Length: 296
Image 1: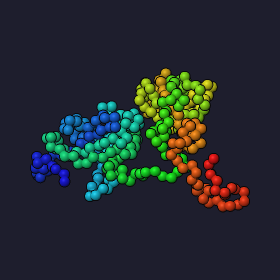
Image 2: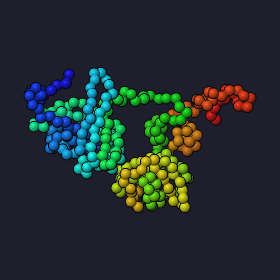
Image 3: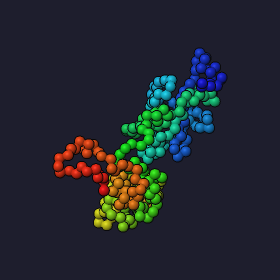
Image 4: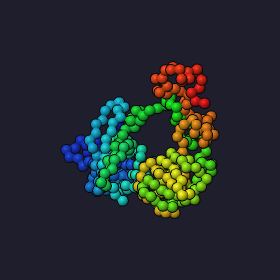
């Protein structure tokens, strides 16, 4: 049962109340931000809750049990609060949000209503809207493994076992030119065939994007220069000369695991499992149906 501070309970039982909401946001990198829908800043739980931050909340319903309830908060980008570039960089993905009911006249009288996490975030014309999900929503996420021809491990993790710090899987260079928000031309990288870094990662080692790591869509060699196309556009374009590191990618196929990484013993897929196409075939005299492996 939720315990309510006696002073706050007395205030709630009064004829008139001075109540507002506060949101205490804890990012995954440990940064703590506070916001309130009151018209002046508030201080409690060792956090300053900023007013005039443009935050507003939608209505929400509470149910008993373990419902995967959601609500929304909306606001504007502010250099003193939430920067659009930080949102694009994923710094708020999965952030913890504590929702408080607070007596703005006496902020020490406050009540933690619920704890949620940030889900889907949408942006439009300098505004954002963030979905707040209850932790019960995690119960709806797929768990365990599935039978699939391709590997379900993440390249370089404990289940995969490949050491991506080895020089044959990693290269460092510099930004030679910025073609657009998704295309970069790099210098100082050699010895890797075109396509080696397809589905890999690009990390910025310095500059405005230092610490940011993004997914690579494709990797090509053009006039002895390395060109990479990113899956998603960059919020902040890098400067020419910024240092970057490329890490090899994997298409999750058994042939790639064996030929590119010499790691077939740790392959986490099921390459011999017949697919839907095989299930609908029939013996026609030309195909082989002798029980031999489907994959050499």
